[in-house]
Length: 80
Image (cartoon, rainbow, N blue to C red; front, top):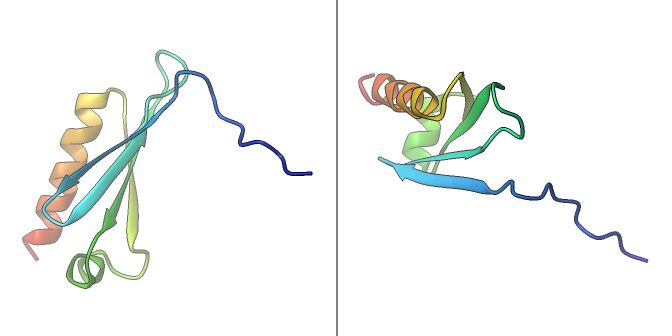
């Protein structure tokens, strides 16, 4: 017997691409909780810029702040 995938109603994964990096996040289930984005490299070059982990979690209080921080993080990586 297989178990069905358990999902939260109304919660969808969002993703956007930015200069060779993938930024993915889910809207928090409750108002006032922390927004978290995962930044991952899409190529050997961007993965090498990120170091050993290959991904980074960025947190913020709002969606716009979270996306701004992810772009700042990517800017810092590309400035190396």
